Amino acid sequence: MAEKPEADTGRSNRQLRDTGVGASSVTASKENNCHGTERLMEIVVERANMTAAYKRVVRNKGSSGIDGTTVEELKPYLRTEWERIKGELLEDRYKPQPVLEVEIPKPDGGVRKLGIPTAVDRLIGQAIHQVLEPIFDPGFSGSSYGFRKGRSAHQAVEKSRQYVAEGRRWVVDIDLEKFFDGVNHDILMSRVARKVKDKRLLRLIRRYLKAGIMVDGLETVRAEGTPQGSPLSPLLSNIMLDDLDKELERRRHAFCRYADDCNIYVRSEEAGKRVMVSITKFLEGKLRLKVNRKKSAVGRPWKLKTLGYSMTGESKPRLRVAPQTVKRLKDKLRDMFRRGRGRNIVKVIEELSSTLRGWIQYFKLCEVKVIFEELDQWIRRKLRCILWRQWKRPYTRARKLMNRGLEESRAWQSATNGRGAWWNAGASHMNAAYTKLDFDRMGLVSLLDTMLKIRNLSRTAVYGTVRTVV
Image 1 (cartoon, rainbow, N blue to C red):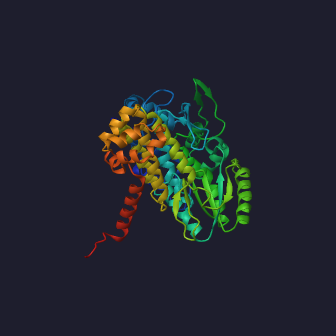
Image 2 (image 1 turned 90 degrees about the vertical axis):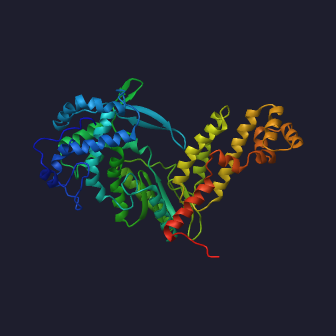
């Protein structure tokens, strides 16, 4: 920001410390008491906190909301409007604007509705998040891994494998139906109010929850749910589901929860069925959350998936990519291959490699390598298929094959075989014309090579450089 939001006059550093909450680096007491949380709004609008929130919003970028203001236009807007906005926040008069609804396809079918707040509302939501997170996070369960600093999906996956290795070879996979769309506002706010006593902040959070949804120029009133797209939603979801975590801990269950994805590990199918019934009753009765019975299941860990991963059925299970995840990746890549039919193959490879790098980084924990090898072969065959289609005429195909080093007789025999593009893409002549090494030189990311490289680097980090003495 060129002109950062001003700190509150009369609010001393000693007063900030007395609340137990600081600005951009807020610290909550480990006893999780409510001392000092009656004046949190002053800390929300404090200069250091707002500056940190601004930097985070700009870094995250994101689309503009209903007012069309982008994050790049946020700075000049705040220069003239911040004093007014700060006054409205402190005087309990600020009203968030409706969110812009957009739909994105879900991996397993259907659509997920996102609510995009305006840039200003994202800024204020982020500032609130920075103040509330240190108050609530220390009290969250150690088995909660989603949307928390220092915690990740990889940790949840590793912990799941540990539970299975210890003999809990049945998993209760609970799927909450449209969780973010179905959260009861009264129940959620009662959980927030346990530790937040500033009435202004509580009312502001409720206004965020009730902010209308703008669809095709028409505003719809929101009666329940939290808008996905708001910086506050991840924290609010953890606050809401903390009661579930505490109930599972009270019953001494082994579980991992990542956002609304919760897996409970038990030692028998009968125990799993009992847990499914009792936890469903708890969720629907106490928290008024609906369990999707079609997607929830009691089964073996190697037949179900955990955050995209699965595992083998050995006594010491190894992690692998879940079959559903492989199918999802192939569906995504197929769209890229379709778009690439009329494009330069190097451009197609650049687009593919960007997706593949992110994918393999997420699945770097996998120890079963065969799927990576199969995917690599499938991707290269798809690229050869694009090339064969682009060549079109037999003369062009024969000439291209000869340019790639094939003998004239073999090139003409291959070019005139009358077979389809997919068959030729897997035939020996195309494999000879475009080898794995050729695609490596074009910049294609090999999933298998990358996975093995990551594992070797991890091994080196643990054991140090291995030297061979001859």
